[in-house]
Image (cartoon, rainbow, N blue to C red; front, side, top):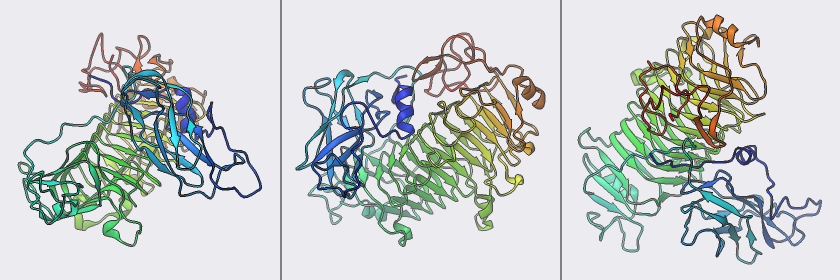
Length: 573
């Protein structure tokens, strides 16, 4: 199938993810001075755009400084608004730049997010403008077509069908006093629609800017769900609230005590806490949305069962995670999401064993069971630690076909108990066909199993550590552990297998003896098909994985097996 998200040059993304401030070409760092900055006079590019593929967010998003006449950053500037556009007569004619096209200075720096260009070509540049200031122009860059095996997701499912019952628009004719039943007489607010809907209703949301809304105690059925459906790609809720003292208004979308609700294609920016919160609900689907720059999370759920979180982009969460499924809900499907540049985990399931609540039954028992975490892409997360995929107190779950690459100060996949008790370790899960790669000097172990995380089956994975090795465990987590057909490496020559309690390192033969298995695991360096192509070239790990796992598709939907056998890792080539 078509590859949909950015390929990127490792050297460039490594710089981006490590927070390199400088870039070649215009800008560099503003001169330092003990003198207070003067008035804003000019713009300068301090991080160049790079890693661009058609229709996908640049791997390196540009950053711009506001400088005074002495070429010094104006650190007191928190108001200048900077716009970005493709420089005239560069790149391919007719190309469109998408994403957040304006940004506001913070301490004199403007950071852009989600920028992408739809047409391949060479010689592109971007121009940054602000009223009264000298423009800045980026260095040239190319936009290429994504290569096979490159980073992919979100995999957005089709919009739910059916004729709309109600319409919401931000046009001048929209009003909550209208009937809302036709495109010519739409309502203005999502909250008004949320106050009216019943089982089977479909709310069609036009592109535009909207205020937050809450769905409360709205009950659909499996055959008659309640649907909020974006008609385009620009229906945006651009904040939650400015105060945490308003608990019902902290989240841009809040779904409370609801059954059978589908939210498709809505986008949120700058929510005070979460872009979307689902609480004390059942059978809610959040799909095809973009949840960016939330104060704490992109998507947050608590005490909820049978959720589907699919094909969403969750990025730049301020303090924590892209997706956070919490408080012991069961049977969640977290599938095909793109979680990037979040301060902590890309995706976290924490069953919160320390916060058990018997009033919620199994939704408050401190354990999450029977869930699927698959086909997700997590990249650039973890400046503040945690894991690309972070799991506390999960049982009998499938973690498969995930691409977890180029994350930061964190583990790749973590299985543990949230520090509560080894009785609540993450047990009896299946970790199959994941690709976890760190860059040199970066990250923790690709897989950690701690505090009673026993009985896990670990097969057909690619684990390549950067600053650390491939697998680490606590002594109480090996009982019942099975592992085989994994590629385990460390690019920085750190011991590949390490006991977390004792710091004792193990060679592959010693690891095999320790778990009485893994005869087909290898430490041979695999060859990927390209610098940003995580599918395996012929050689180590290709066509020789375990064929009995029942995983019949790959990360991008390709069938397994292709060629002579099952490939290790998340791709099949």
